[in-house]
Image 1 (cartoon, rainbow, N blue to C red):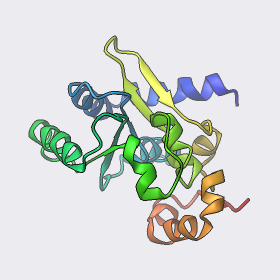
Image 2: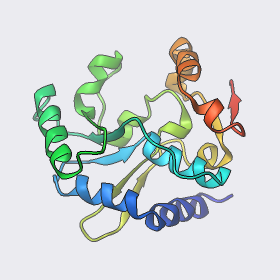
Image 3: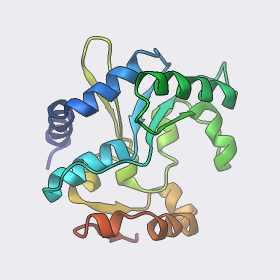
Image 4: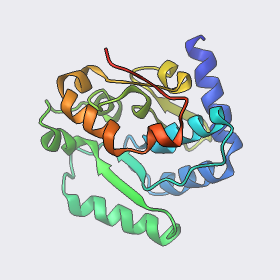
Length: 186
């Protein structure tokens, strides 16, 4: 399927889900630089839809942003508390991608989407931002084919850290939660 068709499908799924839009609006209210919500937030929405399942519970909502001027973990906690005040039932996880290269032993990232290139599996490396004008920006450095194909494939970084990729496959409930998933080991 074409690149643009998949992006349009994802946008339609997000816009049709009032809960997803509400979470995006909540994060947008913080006015974080180069922010998006990614990983399971997008992956579960798509896979639940493709599987005909009710919306999955997420064990965290991954909020990404990029601010090289403020690298403290304390700032991330401050943003998490602000989000918790607005939506206390949501398990927020906020990470400044400008410092995550240190934790992940990678070269410095250029921006949020560049940081996602170092994530371990392709269907996780998708995030979305709700712009001030209401437009949706989708960050997908590896495209959306694997996400909509229900394929878990190692990214180039995942291939370099194949033990970590395999460990995530082992500990995440993806294969039991969505039995139609295919794992492709490059």
